[in-house]
Image (tube, rainbow, N blue to C red; front, side, top):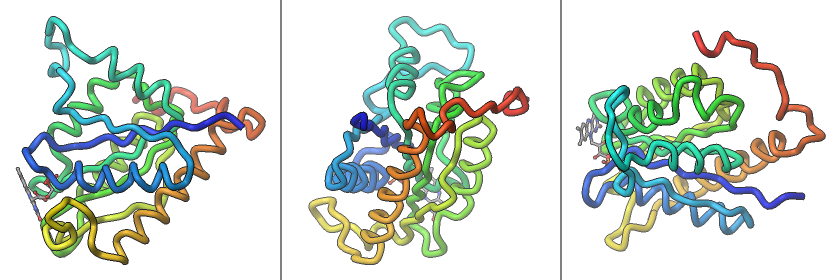
Length: 196
Ligand SMILES: Cc1cc2nc3c(=O)[nH]c(=O)nc-3n(C[C@H](O)[C@H](O)[C@H](O)COP(=O)(O)O)c2cc1C
């Protein structure tokens, strides 16, 4: 079986942001399960607004990274009850029709709030589904994030760690089905409805 590769996409550029810390935890779990993971950190990419012409933009590079990955795990912060503008900008830079079409994805929400990143996760699910991505039904919210991470930036809450591991494991399995040519899912005909 082919070695899989999963992109972990971070939706924050804030210095010391928690989304990256959670994304790094997911990356460690991918490695523990023997899967190649890599982080897409928007701090390292020059991403233009839609329609803006920017010399040296990283749009094509970003699209190539995602195209070559077997799936993408989106780690979105909760900003004003939704996803961050930077997360939406990453998705716009993935094109229309999107590089995400036909690609498996999963959602992790990160919030300072105690009620969970329910709204950003639902908003992101709607957007990803619209692109034609297959979104894993399971999602994980890291609530009260400032209390969940220690000074070294590691998750200190056992339950959150276990939930993230479960999601990572389920997503590997899910993505494997799409990577496996024999499963038929890879060539599943999505039609044009997803581009409406
Ligand atoms: C612009 C902005 C808006 C935010 N809006 C909310 C919010 O609506 N609800 C909430 O609980 N936390 C909110 N937060 C706090 C974030 O959820 C918190 O910083 C968390 O760590 C995720 O963001 P980060 O990855 O940038 O650290 C907001 C933070 C910023 C910078």
